Length: 321
Length: 250
Image (tube, rainbow over all chains, first blue to last red; front, side, top):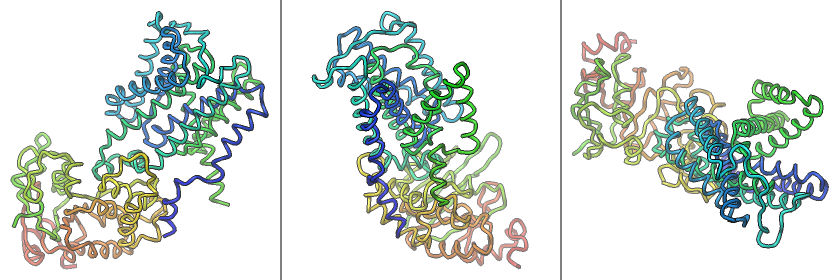
């Protein structure tokens, strides 16, 4: 009966789960000059987390997740630029809703496919959005994007800190924390368990009477909302948005982060984002012109010897010990 | 009395290939019924027609007297038809307990719930654990399915199906691929299935068939060739010639 207890206790919070958040707060005081970088890191973690829900838990292989990041980023930008809607929290909510709507609409169509076809149609969906952002210049600023956006005070109290990113950092940390709690509840719920069932064996899920497509579309929509919030945060924190928000480079980057950290584990997003950004930083120092080569080689090593990423390696080491 | 599961004139073809030819079949309540026939006779296809995985070209499938021919697989599962697979279809990366919990939550209608932790569903956990214990897998409940010996994986196949609390259980070659040293585990499990569930078993192992079944249907080229009690089937010269060969004499 020990085994039943393991499943019955998996959703409970453990002491070490406080560590990332303690580290996040400590970093605020320890590295005051790196908070802009820290804010980017937090936003990247949130984006990777959203991808983990669909890729790691539901097994939806997508190469177009930046579509939702970009949808959120542009929603916040367009609202601020054209409608004078500068209030940050409602802007984030709008970003999440717009991204969710796009996720729902596209999910209903593209989740009829799987495998390579799915990979291609997610990529196409993102490219369509990218082209729309490029061509709708009077709304989106086209190729140049929308620079110099400004936003109101958070909760009417905390103004954005253009120089040191102090407010942005804590804001991003708080939003990430809330989104993480939501995601954590989701993956430990019966719904989350059924997503892992779909990932492991779709045929059997049909045979136990599960509404497979509905579950996938719901997961895809929720994931899109989280990615949209990450994109909205990006625009608010940096004060600009451009086409880089929804390109293939961003979509591939977040995929690499999740593979590097380990997918289907939630914390893989944290570990992967830190590892990727640190790696990028170090490689850029040593080989300023060819740092991406290093990322590529790392990825090959991970794919060959550590299929479950850094966290997978850690789990294996712990099992041996 | 109506049969729990019945087909009337079920016909299915893939192009020129007729895989089910006007099959009239009755599965009685609580029956222990075996479906045998040579390879390619259409046994698994017939099972797929019963579950709704395939739709017949014509004819009808009745569950407890109700026509369910137009119902999709998921709806038939809700009405009490569960199956296992000839080749394992398990959630290999998950534990035995999770495998069964997935089926139980689906049946209890809680599988779409996002707010409550799966680990707090004591109703689901207890029911899954009860089934796992019944199949003598309790000591393996927390193991990943992929780490289990093959024979025990076959038992998980059955446990998932039982998690759906079926009225009709369709077993597609449950003993397939099990080394003979382990096959008694499976025989015991099948013999121990609750008596109120009607069981239809497709099986090549004649030992198992004759020990288990009180009724046997022989399918040849998509059509019912013979049907009867085990002694009747064993005595049927044509059946022996076509299919059983020397199996009964062994």
